[in-house]
Amino acid sequence: MRAIARAQPNIALIKYWGKRDLSRNLPAVGSISITLSTLYTEMSVAFDASGSADELSVNGSADAAMLPRLSRCLDRVAGTPRAAARIESRSNFPIAAGLASSASAFAAATVAAAAALGIDRSRAELANLAGQASGSAARSLYGGFVELANAGDHVTVSPLLAAADWPQSVVVAITSSGPKPVGSGEAMEISRKTSPFYGRWVEQQPHDLEIARDAIREHDFDKLATIAEHNCLKMHSVMWASRPPVVYWNAATLECMHAIRELRAGGVQVFFTIDAGPQVKAICPVAEEDSVRAMLTEVPGVTQVIVSRLGEGASVVGRE
Ligand code: PMV
Image (cartoon, rainbow, N blue to C red):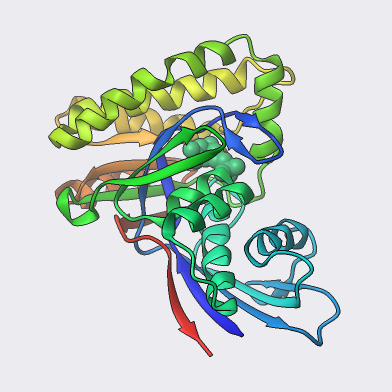
């Protein structure tokens, strides 16, 4: 009754921001992401009928704050009432700082819980269950380039292109490792209710998705770079115009953006994207990885640079 699953975070190139159904955690817009390879969360879930309550440790320490969300995630997979679970989570990258740790955590928890219970569910079903815990987690069930589409009362997640078919590097500039000022779920609701740009954001998303889909199909890096940066800045404009404003950037975030755009103006294929946190993710062909890493390491305020390639979807790595 114990299983261990591993999931990699994913980085959205066309972003999810805003919910259309809070109770089922359905996104207001579709999204397109890339799943990473070297960064991961490993989640061990053991159900124990004699246990009295769920227990969670994250990187070796008890974590009461994260436990209720994970318990609800296990409820959805196992049904209720269910046996208490002992959950152990380990990530090899900074958590809760805009590095999509919730995506890898909830994808891994969903897959581990189903495996521990011996429940046979399709990847599409697991994606929907993970997505109810964290919208972006649904995408970590698949590898490479992934699209999440709204489909009535659920989401449809499908692979667009395998990681090996268009290899890319993701160079992450860490500019702060502290927890974020406001969680993405709460911030999305602030934007939906108060940002004057929110309606236009939702309206324009199908257009951005279509361009990105074409760019990925055609392996057209420049087209993807242009639409991904535009979509990212549009999402952050929605946040900035919210009341109260939602600003995740710091000075180094902006420095990194300028440095990446300068590099591109000099002929290097690279673009940036930024999520609900101050870290900057630079995406480039594998051949440009070293120059992008060297450049971001020099940006004032960057404390660490992490490099990943594109990888596979969540999977079970142990069972006993
Ligand atoms: O899945 P959540 O609730 O952590 O929201 C993710 C939101 C962004 O990372 C900003 C965008 C995205 O599509 O991943």
